[in-house]
Image (cartoon, rainbow, N blue to C red; front, side):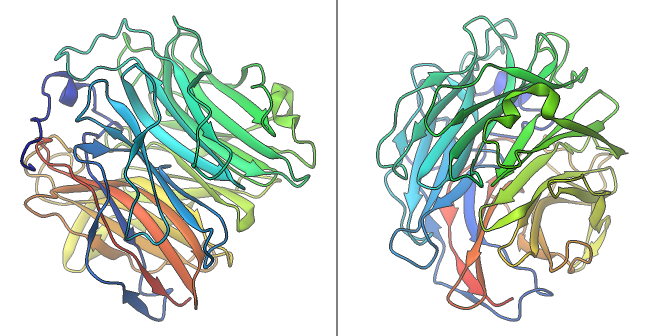
Length: 454
């Protein structure tokens, strides 16, 4: 714990952040590279600090604007700051992943939770939900939960102000945002979440700075992993690139995973009509015990695919949406041994498309330490390592690299985000993850980067 900071709140802090919500964490920005796909890697100096004591986030928290390798390239990061009242959405930027701007608050007067970020052109959108207060010591499920966003149209220099996408009395489950420049050149911003009362997967969009479309239902769920008082919790996660949009969500409490998808086919507002969406039910069942909830990802430099990654009880898996259909699930890594360490489970799986058509996968690998659930982040015995693998074709994956190993201070490492861009030679991969202890008495923010050849 750094001098001068308040202790981490207890009570609801640990109770409500079960299942997917392994939060009150730290963020680390790294260059994640797996040996099999990269011929060489050079690390650029020592670890650096990113603003954000007592901070955490989920995947979908790191993006960029501008042209890689030029002066207008900028990384954008968002996280929740617990060391403030109300809990706030904080935003920071970097030109190189080493020096970060002073973080600024971009949320409103309410406590916020579960930030996500997306960019398209020079537009940046950040989303979150309100209605949580981890400082009251007793999580109140009767509180309303709203979906809110804040938008910048000039790469984060100024912000439009907080906009609510849901009413004051509703209950949402973790809204996520996405963005893309369509084939017609319009900038579309998207948001998706689960209406915890109606148990529907909700979608809204704003096209070229216009008003937000009316909410539509693109799916339903009966999943209540957070309990009946919370309502439905389908963990909807959205990503988009050019004309492609995909939303992965949990459809029931047995772990059924569905993907709602759409190809705009040149019509920038086509997604605002529910009948235009398709639905695919995967044969896999995610592991609810091991937090196998879906993470969607896309890249403006690889406009032909959106990925949805997740994990079963024994493997990290993902599917690809190519604008026509959702692929059969592919395995990234199955339970096994890496670097002399046995892994029995893993979660927060992310698959980020690379500019050349390759892929980078990252996830929290749960070491086999003899506890019943190796991914139980409430256990003082648990050890999570951040693992990464790469693939040139999306089918054959490299042996995972161990990027962040469990340590005394960073016992648990999870929730990665990644950005893959061209480098001077090969590619640069910026990614982030959370590092924390099961007691939540440590979470801090660090960063570094590097380069590799493909």
